[in-house]
Amino acid sequence: MTTTHQSINFSIAYYSGDRKTGAITVIKRDNGETTTTAIETLAATDLAIERKPVFVGLSKENKVILLDPESNEILIKPYFPEDAFAAHIYSDPNSNRDWLMNDGDKATGNDQLNCGDKGSSVTVVEDTTSTNASHLKTICVGRGHHQATFSYPSTNHANTPSQAYISNLKDGTVSVIGNNPDDAENYLSVIATINLCEPDKEEDKSAGASPNNAFPHGLVFSSVSGKIYNLNNGYGTVVVIDPINCNIENRFEFKGHSNLFASPCGHFVLGRGADRKSDAEHVIAKLSVIDVTDTQIKNSIDLKDIYISKYFFNPEGTRLYLTTSSSGSDEQKAHLKTDALLVFDMTALPTLKLISETRLGASVGTLDFVTKNSETQLMFSSNASEGTIAVMNIDGELLEKIAVAKTASHSRLWTLN
Image (tube, rainbow, N blue to C red; front, side, top):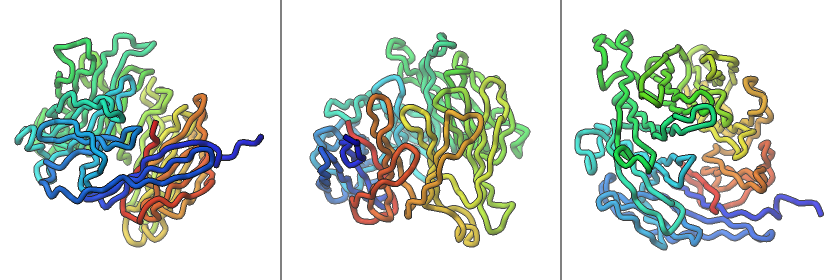
């Protein structure tokens, strides 16, 4: 019997909203039958933003898992408060701990509730998709926006410590946090703050100034080199950090890029960026590959009329997916492919081999995957402006669209266990 995509079972949570209020819908396919269940929505709390409940996750019983930011109590509810704060979450690849980013208020970058005027915070929660979810700690770091990555021992670097690295955009620093439960003294505590200041690129030439103009945005760990790579977006440089001593051991130029991500194999760091200046009518996306063994750029390509939004890898690490969005002048936006999904072959690195460019008819939100026996069976894309989920195969071929919710400006989805 031939297996069709309609016969593959899945369960997906879909969040949509306007970045102030939102709702959650669960879509399930079982033996070819598709059901859609809207989670009960509670009216807005009208609390100040720093006191709004934080949305942590959804359990397999469709219970909403929330965090009270004042008491740090985990709340399990049958409903979703429509103004709950949907935090940006980074998952520790070697544990069941998730790290929730809090960038602080827009004016100062401070989390005044937890950190006063000393910075913003990250919150560590265990078992975020279970009714056994527990708050471990809220940790004050520098002023946001934040990105996170995690170092850990590997085959070639057995002495690499288990640590979390949080970049602090407003301060121009990286906070290093102990992430080994067996090291009680340092576990979930800030053990170092790395100042990213490059005095020759600052107006006052002050060494070690913070805040500074480094504007870190792009932070990854390579298990191959055992090093952390941080993009100083304000300087156009990448710094290489040794996790063992938290020192910057190297810097190199990497202009024209605004974010970094590591290949699943750990051998390469990829940078993406956008050129809005060289052509008055076209935005040109840039995608570059750095080999971590010598920090040399091995390949770089330009993508006309593309502005890269987000990146995703399939679970087995053989595909890179780039979503697109809108940026640039009105003349440039008129030509942009804002509904494109680009699929690259990760097995061809350092060559950037484009497998497909799928036009989905609406801007892509987030992607997630269903696997079986460690192989991707289906890929899903949230499409807020249509209120749909696009169902695709591993190479981005569109198989169907499922109507889910009302149209919105923002959406994201994730597969449920």
